[in-house]
Length: 262
Ligand SMILES: [Zn+2]
Image (tube, rainbow, N blue to C red):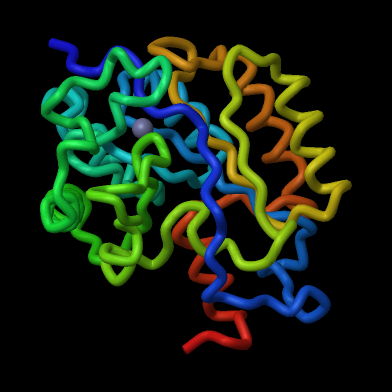
């Protein structure tokens, strides 16, 4: 049974800066040029089949933003738990993946998770329930959030401030200063194109590069398993330049090294 044919596409939010990093002073843990958060949204089979084995082979940690209503959470829960035990982050992506059906190409958004039908207290509760569910899977009490589709308006207001205290960080919500972070949702690109983009971000001075995958060698908005593997092999071989870790670990480092941290 499949409830999602297509899910979130890459989005851009306006960064709201409650963190401040003095560029000269700020360093990644081993002085790397750029941190890379590899994330995988929606809890889909090809991530368990292809992405996680590849990450584990290269001993790289990543973040998986689980849509908890996804059939893979029900059917393959032990594999998600094993991923967490291996050091990957299971991030919050809500239960039902609320997005706006009113936007273009959103025929796949059913009315029960059309965010335009939500109330603010309803999304806040769904996000909280998701954290409880994730805690039941991995035993952790801290995590990060990626808002589905990047759709953040509920009943006319941005809901992220109302859920902010449930998280270490929210993707693209507090990534510090202009130019500090960048993001990309690659679809149907080659391994070389993935590597070229990483190199150009580093050359441009991006300090944190978020790569947002969906399908890997299957499902939708996909990159091939071969292209993904090629990127990981490159990253694993260049760990003096790139710090690849889960988004939560990266953002904890940012927070701990932010002069304005409260
Ligand atoms: Zn999504």
